[in-house]
Image 1 (cartoon, rainbow, N blue to C red):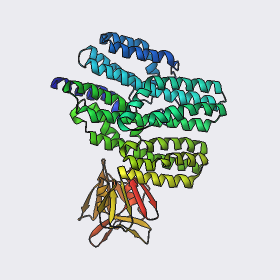
Image 2 (image 1 turned 45 degrees about the horizontal axis):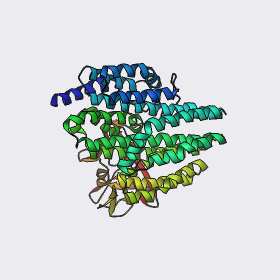
Image 3 (image 1 turned 120 degrees about the vertical axis):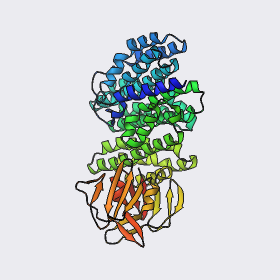
Image 4 (image 1 turned 30 degrees about the vertical axis):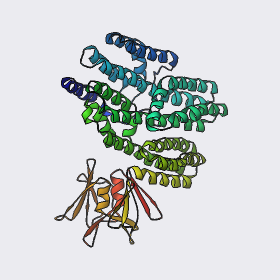
Length: 496
């Protein structure tokens, strides 16, 4: 068994990952990026072929026969989706074929092959739904072709109900979420009404709700594996690791676009092939941070689109913001999430109405709840700061009157996970996290990032030493390091 674990780790890390995974950037389907042909949208035969492959595994057919059947029924179709993915990103077929060929050679197990085919094809079908709803239904309705738009939606519904809903219901069962109800009772029926009205904006909102809810689901599916793998018998762990690897690959690119270090942490853990390297608490925290980063990003994007009077675009992005805030559900106490849930409909309404002030207000409230999961929340001048919802006593922050900037003791940054060192010889504060070091010198308006000056950036508030305490400009450090600042009536929120 130890040899098998070692072999799996080497195979996954060197062969599979070196070929593709660590080059993974944002998926080609992110937002409204155009797709590339050819993609086979005749889905009924593919759904049937998927069920046939699962039946072959259930009947314990020889793995070589299953490999041939996969090649006959899916290889070209999967490559059609793979060909629409940006060069350098991981692709579905390469990963499935890798596991199948090594299982045929006896280097990987039958159970690992079964997980790779099942979860790998779920990955494929998820991307296919992206194509059907975006390049298919949205484009058709934009062109006024309601019949074609409905045909694409019918295909999407068939794929969802036949293939993906099983995983949605599983995560609902494990985490007490309601993703299946949202999709089956609201989103999928909503498409029909959108098409009847010729409402492209509403269809795009529902398309984003479907897509981002599935991102939530496959993130939670990954977490479910992380939380169970350590409880399994040693013989069953390699298949579970493969399962988690394919689950997460379905959404890795999108989450990496929000928080690369945490997305990589999750991916590397499963790619190691070693269940002992999968920490449930670390995976949970990293997944939450990825989703929080997307909440921040899409709050900003909605406001940017409204500034350009792009209400249609803002409405769709509001659907994305809804999905990523909803993904925090399992990370918040049930009562707290129930309190926060009305913000979902509020942000959809505000985005769709083009009300930037309302979006900004809802975005701040979302940030308050996100900080209860991972972030800090404080009022300027108070002697307490809440770190992931837990109150701690600290030296108060203050606002420098001459600049209007909030200055915080270095302790605040340490609570955000930064390492802060002060070089007395050069009178420089060095603030480090996630491979980035920011250097700020007392009295200077310049910032060095990893030793190099930050182009076209000057501090309007330098470092201050007061009563032997070093105070740093919070906004500059947070934003330069990829964090986000929210401020309202003296209350400050810092999240990823």
